[in-house]
Amino acid sequence: MTTTAITNIGSLVTNDPALGDGPLGLVQNAAVVIEDDKIAWVGPTATAPAADETFDADGRAVIPGFVDSHSHLVFAGDRTAEFNARMSGRSYSAGGIRTTVAATRAATDAELEANLLRHLHEARRQGTTTFETKSGYGLTVADEARALRIAAAHTEEVTYLGAHIVSPDYADDPAGYVDLVTGEMLEACAPYARWVDVFCEKGAFDGDQARTILTAGAAAGLIPRVHANQLSHGPGVQLAVELEAASADHCTHLTDADVDALAQAAATTVATLLPGAEFSTRAQWPDARRLIDAGATVALSTDCNPGSSYTSSMPFCIALAVRDMGMTPDEALWSATAGGARALRRADVGVVTPGARADLALLDAPSHVHLAYRPGVPLVSAVWQKGLRVH
Image (cartoon, rainbow, N blue to C red):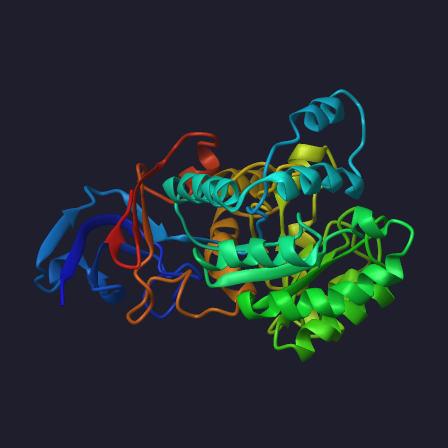
């Protein structure tokens, strides 16, 4: 067994109120001892046990590694032209996904994996140590299965999203595509996935279609998540709560009944907010304040994808959430770490407590508040993932 002590931490976010002050469990002048891939000890530097190696944080802040619980990283090509047109006045709709579908189908396995790894390394440099990613840019049995197989080699949090949009091959037969997604495609994809997702939205899948897809996925052993209420009011949030989905993602257009439902389901269904999408599409911001005040559990994630949110930066999303969504810096950080873990139904990440996975980010700043206070500045100066310093 190898132990490493990170000492002289000016401000440590544990996300465990039993270890420190407030909901973030803040510990000042702190130390963390890592044993192999786990947190072994947390407390004041003055009483830290001896370790094989020591890293001096020199008064800087340490936070849990970010947990990005919503991304779309198995794809090829980009949509620069679409973004440029949108910034010049064209609105966003779900149909742009077809451009990425064509590029992804044409790419080799090696090209898809290389692109995935490039984005993972980019995210890790910014403090992300746990990530979920989805299929959804193949929309054939073979292409969806290979996307999930490639993803599963790099994360355990893999989501089957054959129901991203109706495949162009089934443009005149959406019912036939639902049959494919819930039949042969599900059978091929389920062995590689933990989750099943559906884009419940005008231009994608309606409430009845989404229920059919999620119910079939659950019968195959996958846990539901839902792209819900992104572009308009719709049935997605209510469906997510009804089926006890792990998360309802986007949650931009909510009725009072939707907010109440998410608050009542706070222990099971997390409202995952994706401000990168609103930034990139100039859309209405989700109202995080409304959800938090109602008692809902809120996560923040990047939604990294080539069309509507091409960012892998959790610090950027924190800054957006604080400035434009009504969150405090403390709430935004919790949502980007412990909140993301809740959305993945994980207790071993998003926290710095004994027994948790040793995922940490050192900030070149005295406090986590600098993530929102200094937007766009690369503050993450070191990252530990599963106990190893990886950046």
